[in-house]
Length: 122
Length: 391
Image (cartoon, rainbow over all chains, first blue to last red; front, top):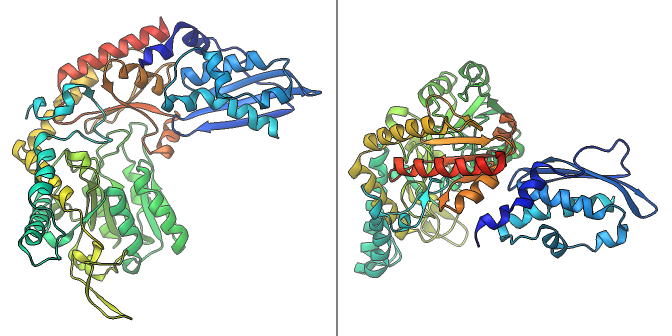
């Protein structure tokens, strides 16, 4: 696999102009997670009302894959049911990103989902 | 020396030599030759094959000793520099006066974590010599941190993350003034410059074979004989004993006292072959050639405006950098497409990354086989990455 496949235009665009990037003033759920291998650092903040995601933001530092994944994931989950989000897995992220990812960089792509799951457990 | 001596370099531009180096055919052949012609357990059999293996192992030790100007019984073979430092941390306690261990903020985790554990176990405090904004050690701070409370000063001669060459003589002189012991992490210096333990007058020195053309799995600890003699073994078993009853054992002489179990003859032979290869070129020549390549690389990299370079003036062949708005891992992944191998990450120096204020850097590190063409290919590929993210 060529790494260039990971860096298609939609990924670079999402990285340069991420959606839902920033902070929420009064989150009901939040979690900060690190990927020690990369030094990625992502915080997810959520407002959950009656089991539905009303608002979501993320912030932090990460590589193109982790930021693009967080941007697309936060877009996707707005208005979703918490129970359905808890069922989301690796495959859902790969479907969002639409690129092939090798085992080393998979951690980057999955960091935001992991952070989201941890935030919702709290 | 010629790139053709290194089979793997026909396929890649390899710029991650601070992590590990490639092996010349001669080293690979020496290891295979040992297994094909001389393999037996060293120091065991009275048959010729075992004696041959023992002789090769002892010869390898002599080659390593000569390389750093030590005596053969001051050389202990370990798995790597990490294990060498762990050995000292496990066995040095009875020799220490004082309650503080002084390190620097630029240590590799291998020269940090063993001392963190040592301090916790023995009730010691860690002190850290700080770094100045020019990426050199703050020697005024060193004068404060090294004092009469200091038991041991352990520091890297060359920073693996930045390439900074630290002034070992100066630090050792400070330590001696306060009767503290010294340990040099020479993992990034022994492969690249002349390291003379007699001249340095350090108490301990550690390095790895695989970072100097040798195989993985063999490392070296140098220790002054009078200190090693006073230290207790840290692993126990065969080969490290002189006589054993059911209740008691008497330790073997140096250096066997610290080499429990079957020793790694093949990789010791490989390391000796690597040292011969380096000495054939000359460590002074290697140092000079790397310096020239480093200057060329700095000059070329400075042309890329989005790069920030973390680099001290007096430096070994290592350059750490970041590119504005691009994560180091993205740089390394994209360079990989051009078959250029560089490191991206925290370089096992997380506290240093914190001081630099970055989660990670990209790092290139040279060795004897790297050329200006390698640098040109790197620069071209970096410009491509820049265009992708900044275009």
